[in-house]
Image (tube, rainbow, N blue to C red; front, side, top):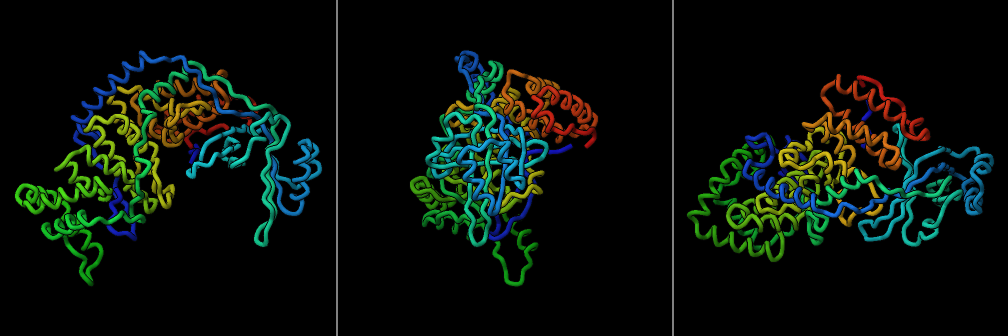
Amino acid sequence: MKQIFILLISISSFNCFGQNEFGKQSNELIYSDHTVKQLKFIVDSLNLKFKSCDLNKIYIAKSQTLANYISLSGEQAKEAKKDLDANISFDNFIKKYAASEIEKDLLIVRFKYKNYKDTPILEFNSVELNGKHNHRITFTGDYAKYETPLKQSWIINYEPGSKSSETFLNAFYIKDSFKQSPLPVTYAKMIQYSDCMVDTSTQVFYQKAAKTGVRFSNKKYKKIGEFENYITQKTLRPAFSEGEDDETFYKKLEEWRVIRRLKIDSLYKKDLHFVSLFNEAVKEAVENGGGGDDFEELVGLYYAKKTALELKRNRIVVGGCSMDNSPRIHAMNIAKLSAETAKWEIFLRAHLDIMNDRFDRMSDGSYAQSGRKTYIKELEVLDINVLDLLLGISLRVENASNNHYYGNIGRLGRALSETKNASLIEEKMLSMIIDHDLDDYNRILIYYLFLNYNYNLSDKKLQSANVEKLNKAVKTLPNYLASKLVPEEKGK
């Protein structure tokens, strides 16, 4: 069977050391019973609010159509560009340019968004099927001509050659008009439920948040530095000795960290100079930013959890390598502080970021991903309608609310494999795949969601049974899609 869609502690600024994912409480969750109780109270009120919400909004599917794809490089590409500009027919093009790479009958989806520089982007993307790479053509700036009716016309990307590269041309031939069908009410309610639960008016991090982490040094501030140096001296933090091997030093460092909290607690209760330095450091951090995990932990313990949360939201942790788990630990700490301070709108986004593994990393090899968990149980115990929530952030629509949370299909499939409501979720996903009233793009997305779900199941018999169900559901897809999806094999 194929999988589709494709506790680090930072001790040194030059290395990454893998460690297990963050531990659990005695209740087998990552949040305490007290925190869960606080969150359930909020969920209950949100569920009641949803029942009284206006559920009449019509959601429109992403703009999509059927197209053929061509690509050509070298001297012929120059001449081909002129023919495409003159709107040569597809049949005449492939006769004239027999060397072209050709793929027929692809599902093309049109996306409009703004990139990180706030530049408007128009993108045409073919949907990946049967492991074949998707094709993408992107435009920035003035792309008005590609927003007009495009039936039986070309969408062209042309790259003139240089001394080091050949001229390259690729294009989509749009066979039919782009369509945007309304989503059936059942699925519209899922999207609305996700927006009801995941506050669309906020983000986890502030816009001014600074990047920190192994490869991003945080700004050093005088008062925070003085406070941290005082802790180092008073708690006898071990220093690396010349000739000492790494293993010995890190062992001493871990032993120091075990007793560090007790020593700091004693300093806070008995050392007036410690308290004075701490208060000055907090004031500096609130006014100017700065700090890190250790300092923010002390702010939460001895000053205010709300303040610690604010400091964390002003700091985006970027992973230094694939094994660096520090962005996930940062998100977990934000989720915990948000829960403890009744900041639901921050809590759920932070938890979903953990579930979707939505973090910046300098590199992110797939070999490191297996140790990152999804924590669906934490949502189920809160009495959230997890099925509607996760399907609501899996569906793609043209007119979602601003700041709507979109989930990662691969990660959500893995999360669903750990659910306590497997049969219900399987039945719902399969019913969506065979639903002719749902647009083709979303049907394919749910197909991949089911594929990832089934891949991550530990029960091999259940996997095999699901393969039969999925293959049967695929046959109900339009032929141009079903014909390209090779049936899954049992036990693989």
